[in-house]
Length: 80
Image (cartoon, rainbow, N blue to C red; front, side, top):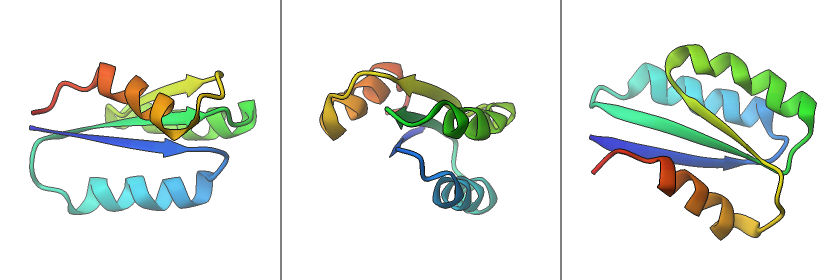
């Protein structure tokens, strides 16, 4: 029903807390799309473990700002 788009850049600890909270507390049907926005390869590799929770991880390598990254997520979103 819902699409949750999260833009992150090298904030793996904060992102992990956010994703864990959503996974644990959200009961509705949802999808999560994370845009790793021009972050390091190491940061991207650390958050890839969440793909096993059916979280889509997109590595954005173009520095287009928040709006550009958010639009990448919107293109992938299937929620209402």
